[in-house]
Length: 357
Image (cartoon, rainbow, N blue to C red; front, top):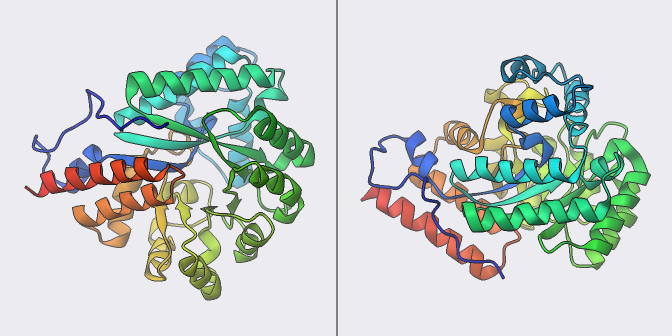
């Protein structure tokens, strides 16, 4: 049972010295649906882990990480990402990372997050599956009790690791089935990694009650999104950037209320989109698609969820009321139960009303 959302003691409150849209966003209660576990490691945590594992190529200086996290292209991003994954070598590392990610979320007034977790990256490096699950679950419960952040998991297949990774991810998800697990995903490169090959694993996950949320259409065309919808039974699409190239696909997404998990800064950092001005978010919204705003791998991209909301507000021409409505999109698209959705949506409404007052 999800407990009522509560305001962390450090969270900004309406009625204080908040006078512009950025301040409104800072205090706005939010949900995030597309954010990666390892990719959310702050420079402080990455440098601490790198110091604990000195054989790694990852810099131990937080300032040097800024250059390290500058990506030439999507392939280079994956290479850097995996080098950070290699810093997570035991269950203590897993627990530390997970709790600290939740702490950073609390600072942004994120009330609820569906964190994309890649168990195969840890189990293939020798962390026992049960120990991995126990570590993230212990961190999840502590984060909710101590920080007021409700975490849920999406276990995703690292597509570049192939069907062995798909089998392992499906086994852990279906057999161990931790309490916080709500969905099953697919990440990593899209080029050369066709979606339909993963259909049997998504079928298994859906059969035990997990939701399907694969990445698709980030670095490939709209055909990849269609494959995710038809072969993988996607209920939400991670990124879906290229959907704007296919009016029929946009109409389908709008008609079926299939949300897109949009991550603007990530798309620029990985060169999926050239500039923010060219980002197709407005085309998606104008077509009636349910768009949610997310940060993907925030420290790696020099961003956070508050920044992404500011970008979305500028691209879509939103005022505070429009930003609040956008925040409620994420609540509606989440896998929270109906009472918890109603509570968080009401909290957003109350905050926005107090701000106007």
